[in-house]
Length: 486
Image (cartoon, rainbow, N blue to C red):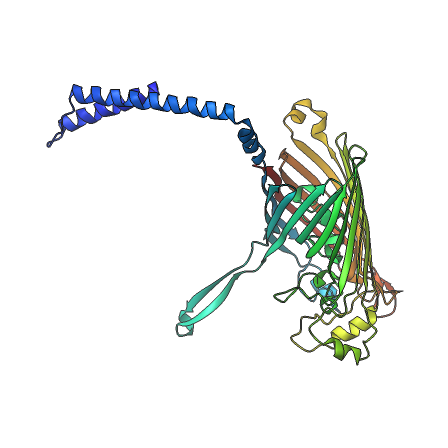
């Protein structure tokens, strides 16, 4: 306060001198300054008295101070995001997998993108109650505007300025009874497969999400669901979920059941139901093992026909049961990171669903494509942190990984339970090498070279061999992932 008083006096003296120099001056006398100083002193004394009173109140009511301390740290904010660029030494023409793929053998293209930008907020209300929310902007979100077209007689037109998506990825309410029993309801992530359970940008080495799981099952898979979950002191973590089934109308050959998640309507159809479960073990330092699965019917989750119409048709016994099983693991210690997983999926009545979707009317939500009965995806990646060899860099929490990754996946592995190469471009091997540099724990700079080797198939002349062009690319990105308690 002494510094405050001295500063105030100096300002007033300066103001007085300035005022005297003005044409219509107001003269501040010494008596005026003295009265102002005395007033500041009285304010100082009153403030000191209030401060003592507050200390006494805090001493008399320690429980109030404790409650205030407990309230801190209840608000959680965070998220993740990616800024990426790539150049692909192959074509992005929609006919590149057609009858004459050699026509596009020397083509190439590039992309700049924001694949995912996610904002997360959560709050712990106390007494076991909490809420979580997550909004995701894919590919920069969407933009539209109304414009007056001068070249079209001044007509008003609505233009799409940017393609992308904005989605409420999570909104759930949760009650924690104890560490063994937690009940959650609302929009939440379905943790089937390693990628859905650990999809933050710093949880994989590649610039983009791992292609295998990302191709054949929804990612990030989120549905309105009811979940029971918990943990044990021995390092076991478990989740069991009840949720609406997928929509077989929108299954296709490239992405299998992935498009069947969510809903193109203003509500989620729930004519059929499904269950999902996950178990993780983290009882060994640096190691995580995960087993997950999903099972549910999909065929009648549609608006194209009523249940009565289906009961009277040739499709009355079609269920379209989707079964997915996945194993994933991660190990991190001594500068080494090793991750991987295997996912297998089966769709019953695949031939009937294919026939039904192809017959749907023009303008329907169906892509009218063949759908596999069986799919698979397998991948493993390994990296070593060379900064772990330098104690100074370790103390600064900086990391520099050199990594390699291998994937194999096929979204048309079997059709009606029979092996097929009908769409050989749906299956491929992918090899990638690159670096991840972490200047701080929450941010990574990534660079990667990958090479996609497409599966062999049967040519038009009946011989087997290479049909489609391989797909090499280079990619760079900077990513962020972090969560903070306030």
